Length: 380
Image 1 (cartoon, helix red, strand yellow):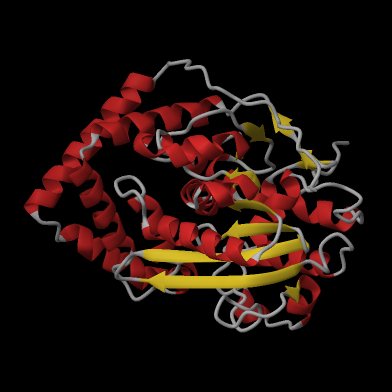
Image 2 (cartoon, helix red, strand yellow):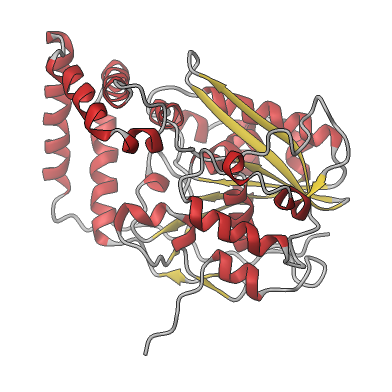
């Protein structure tokens, strides 16, 4: 009989050691990253209403679960994680503060962050990844041709502001887009704050433009980055990536491995695989070559068109879409049916470029650089 795979919730339930007894590790980072998807409005103080932070157990005890989980994609798994955290000696007394949640349809911005204070001199700034809203996904796609996107700029300002009010060491990170924002914020927050940042975690977060990777700010902090991706990584291999990463085993298949609850945990770390899967490698190389072949204008038009299709109906998020999917799909087809000639021409060309990239990468056995799992130092 095969043994049951453990995930982040199992880790919380089975681990009763405090951070003083067992140092912060990558699994803790993913837990905070997933916890940051929760809506803490009216429960956790922001910058304007600053007061001493609120403990995790008190936030969960409030039991506003419908509001808290409104934009969370893995609602059931997140609720189970919350129950486990509420009674965990490791997590329950951690203080939450500086909650931010900013949405702007016109600017195509979806940004949220919160600080977890492990003690008075060590804090984790967690940046939320893409939520269940169409707006959140639109901003992700904008990364293909805009740098910085609004959430990256907001992340840098957030980290500067939080650091000014916090004493001691700062760790930062996030899942998906949140990991990308954490790196951008650390690179852009200035040398004084960057010096206080001990580690930056990106859990299956997309990469950057080559210009950003060459910047002075990025070069200053790149040695502190700890990147983890699942075997079938797609999101985490988008755009340009530099340096090594650890590949994590997942209990799910394909694109579903982006789900943090599928990542397998052993002891104080993830269970590490040798490399990303051949299928993921092929798809990543194909998409990378395809995006490079498209001009700035083509990328922008393609992204805008896809967004106009998915947002054609009355829905603003995936849950609403599924409630009335027949009407939503009809609205999508109506948009596709009425594409103007210039857009149709660009889409045809983009499709040809994708096929060319797919053919080019067929049978290729490109080497993929995989970093060894990093051994982390104790929190001071």
